[in-house]
Length: 212
Image (cartoon, rainbow, N blue to C red; front, side):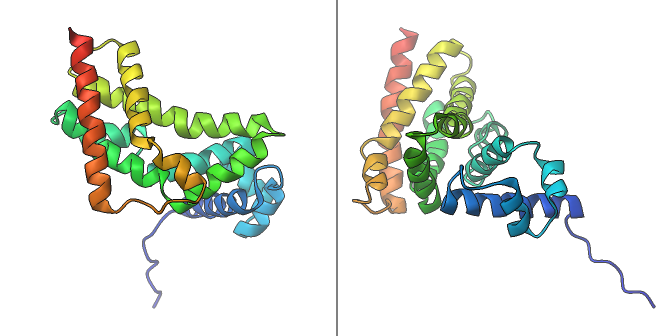
């Protein structure tokens, strides 16, 4: 009698995640420059060919690692639109998304990666650009989409982008810099709720200003 094969992820997906997780760890601890596709292959227990079958370059793998971290906090375009689902007011939509954003920027791995990028950026602006495009820039673009959706099409794309930038700045406040410097602890959930609520109210006032 044969034993039925357990249902699970396809092997290709399993290997993709193995590679991505190994790469994320290496980028975080060794930096971008010292991490190679060879070391990623060894760390993930797959062949170099398998790594390249999923990611055609180290740049693509690095950006996928950053995107994966954002996705874990529901901060990509598809997920953001999903959690606002077209039924929330701008204020409620901003609160929901803003809380996830703050949780991401104070995530210990995210903070550590930011420090790694800052250290490498002095001699490698390429890696800084890759990080910016996959992380901060992508988050602003997707926040812009949420502002446009929750704002019921009352703003131009440029105005929505400006509001997204303003909202991000309000969310980061002094928190992000202090976290990077290691001189403050992460906010508690109640502190996040209060902080995000204030930022959302200020952004809604800016929204009303644009409509005048």
